[in-house]
Image (cartoon, rainbow, N blue to C red; front, side, top):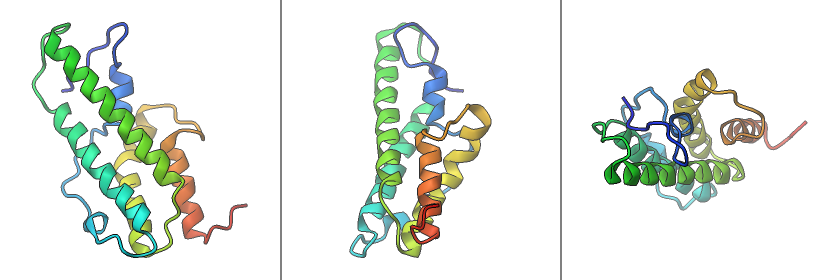
Amino acid sequence: MSQIQTAPMSLSRRDALASVPASTVTALPVMTCAATTNEDSAALALCAAFWRVHGRIRAMDTDPELPYGSPEQKQFEAELAKLCCQEADILGQLANTPARTTAGQQGKASILRTILPTALADFDLAAECEEIRLVISLLDDLAGGLAA
């Protein structure tokens, strides 16, 4: 159970969970840790950054509950909000970064495979949200950049 409790002027459980899928990722994909010397170095570096931040968010989500309103709980919420913002920023950057190689495309796809099912099931996602933008970006990559 998450430690996020809805309170005025704090990160809501809904906002936090938008970046924290309920499903467990058993291992980080190997391709995201590959040497970044090829033409997809930027995309692969962003994939690796995503997995680092995402792992920290998931770890925090399993921490024991803190007393509501306590300084520790407020600090926890602030750190989680910061990580959720970092994760969204990385997704936005990744959506703007083409993946031209199989490794880059697989890096994007593995992230989507992890985050999208829960996000679609739990939230009203619009075309401008980072998750959907990343899907469109990956489809553009796979189609050779030929946007309709």
